Image (cartoon, rainbow, N blue to C red; front, side, top):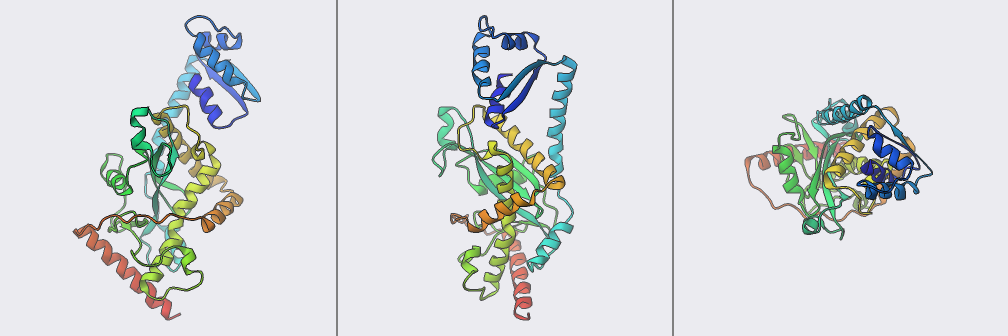
Length: 329
């Protein structure tokens, strides 16, 4: 019950109904019985309830409560929905609109930081460049801004390269079909399934607003940047829909609970993008992404192995085909 009240506060809800199968707790809260072994718990709940415009505590039969828990477990299974790699139909259409010469590009991938509460002894591992404790959440999305993979829980100081290696090898791993790839920024190694921009070449969209691309690598980077913003836009829409993820205030719950909240919000985001995309919200995010300042990413050290060489071959062939088509227009 207490965790539910705290979560409702974090979500800035104003009208709430709390249900529990614990009759004694419901009675104690309703009658403000602050004594006994539950006194401290009841006092905390009573104090918190004053922050809501409307707040009611109701008893629920144990069978109904069991059904609620089973529904929550079902929601966890639904995570498989965005861990499946969808059809490339949406991707090829979007890519073609930017002149991207391949139907094998299935989306974009990056990380975002979310405020987290951890024990004092763990704080240094979670305190990154933002100055407060965060977790680094890895996510992949399609070009219709739906998440296809989400991996929360990593410390704020964990590098992108370390997290992606784990994502590709863990049991519930990021699945990328043979011959397909995601777009990533320079913080990731260029691989056959993770295509990064050329290093040492103009990349950000603003850099091309005055002077257009002058060679194949610059054209590739321009179009790569245009498409890769999909993941930034997906994160932007997610955080505007669910302020509990965007808040910089330290939460009242542990990392495991926050991981569950992040995954649940991503599932709801995918559902809403299908039934109620909210074009005005997307347009607001697009405007912010266009004018946002993105810190230059420190490139990952070069790895000279077969997969890296294959990634370079794929990138070079796309860039060459793009440039040939570009100069003939």
